[in-house]
Image 1 (cartoon, helix red, strand yellow):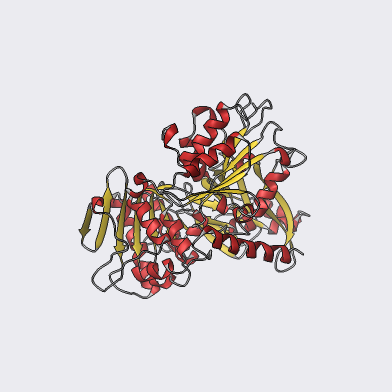
Image 2: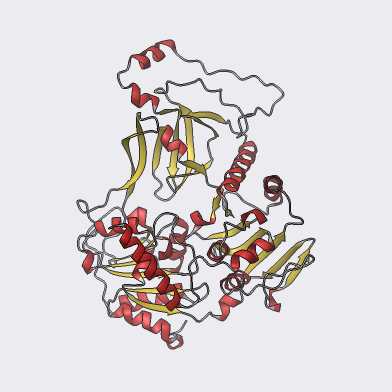
Length: 523
């Protein structure tokens, strides 16, 4: 976009950048938030309003401008980095990364009142170990999903928060954070707002953006039994009908594939149908579990789809599956599995027996053991792991029995994808807080972007879905969106907004009420 083509809304953002004003820049998909941010940062650097970093840290590069581009998820950060110059790519970080989150172990009590050891990720940057003073400008992208608690931890790590200028970027059509209140909803009441309202032609040429805007504005066509028409798509999308699929394809601009359910099945049968499709999609090259993302409104469905995907991939890799006993829960895991541990994307690097474990014996690792604990071979007998008697007696004689009873049967070595840090997991509490990461809920996907997204909705999800949920799910797709859907459920969701109001003034009224209730709750 050339210098003379900035619209008044974008010029206002650029001027705020030059004059070092904190502000919020909001806009729906396709309104040019990223382009405007690039122009704002360029103007800031050209006018030398950002100091150079002098301090050397693990997360920021000395000798570069003192500005950081932060977001909640690694995928969102990668999206920012693609838009920035080479010298600024090293300053595109997750909030957790700049705060140097690291695992720490602590004592807590379980439901039975027993003292157990747990693990959590905690920031190493704080008021006692602050970020460099030369960091004077912070851009927070996807600010709608940043909760107040994490923002407070960021403020605590700044040596002089009053001197730091913030630019909050967000989309009010997305969901609030999974936990806590969005910091964007609060900052909209405190700071100047730049609202981008113009949707550019390039965006409208994308069927993904067109569908998202149709959901945002509730511009859905009427449904009947023989047709599935979610929106009045432009003719240049190249609409194709393949069996029951409807494909809206604009080469180089994006692709949307709608796959409506042929009939209303029982939810259990629908879920089985999805699980059965996973191997088929993989073999066809239609779905790549390592790169693509499956979204679903319901945790239960995500769990089952994850198990089916992990089982298929494990058999394809011909890996041994380990039975892991963690407290009252039993898991069947293998090297190479993708997990989410404490909201961090991780890969299992190794699994081996935990010498501190005192509980029930586990089954031997097996290539015929599936993720539900069933042997898929003809032989239904398992070799039992041998336990060294001397080691067992030494364990029992150990004075730290409480700590040992909190241990899981295996130690799992994982790599945190965001930080590339390798962590050992051995306690039952951490295992119980972990999930497979192939299919996640739309809430957990906020701030993420993936080349191809599979958005699965059934009629049984209708009560859970809202306009913001559907909009958020759709806009996670960068190049291709596949929707296995119930048209009725989507239409119902599009007519049910969670953040009340259509105009900015109405939404501000909603946030004012929410913030007031929060203040009352906090005394």
